[in-house]
Length: 358
Image (cartoon, rainbow, N blue to C red; front, side, top):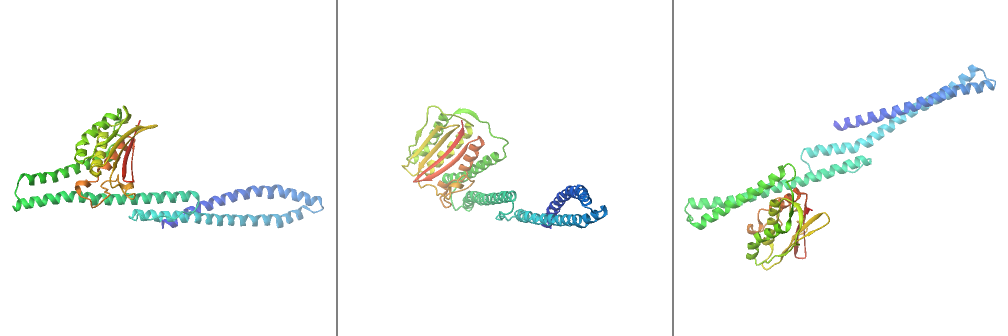
């Protein structure tokens, strides 16, 4: 119904406009032919011996009739051309309208053909990009729900098992049991805090305050905080920093970013592996990078590693895997201060980097 109304509206407007243009053209020509031309024709005929009545009759039977017939044909042709043009415009617009209704009903895989004038093709391209973006957002939403449910279910199931075993006196309420219970509860607390941090970043109004600060002591302090984890893995981080490196950042959030990246490096670098931290000033920003040896990240996973709850290896153990939120927090905190994040992995080396405005 809406498609027919759309066509009818376009056809009527284009036909009316075309008819008005044709009418104005006919009026201008009529003024010249039937006005000026009539007088000239009559004067010439009288000069060659014809009477005035005969000259008028000849003019009316030839020029006037031909002119009126031509005007009628022109008006009809303009209407037909207007209808054809309206159909050419309305067809792709109807396709986009139908596709929009399908998207509203939940069909996010719909795409519309690129046809029609350049403006309509541009509209179709914009619609297709929007549909793909919505499809990607829906995929991320589903994965987020599934992974969040998994992250909650595992410690809750462990807690339930321990409590039932204590209730049935299957295990003794000793110090080791309570330590296990505390570990599972602490995992839930860390998960809830990470989710709170992500939610706070999503709903925050405006960017967090950024100040001019020297990154060198902040990076050095973060490395020292992570050194026990490196020592347990037999890793000696290589730190390459200039004497001073000024950038605009939020110091507390930058510490969180560095802690998450260093924690990942300690977790996924094999014993005796190498970890290097470097920072440098560029044209208009400052680049901080962290490189570690290890298994690497498959190329198909690289575009998704900063998504919430995304894991490269879905089956890896929880001791190594974590909740899959750390890199999402890194991305959110860095971009909140006008920076960028990225990752690359090849040849047994994985490099995470982020930039901050200078």
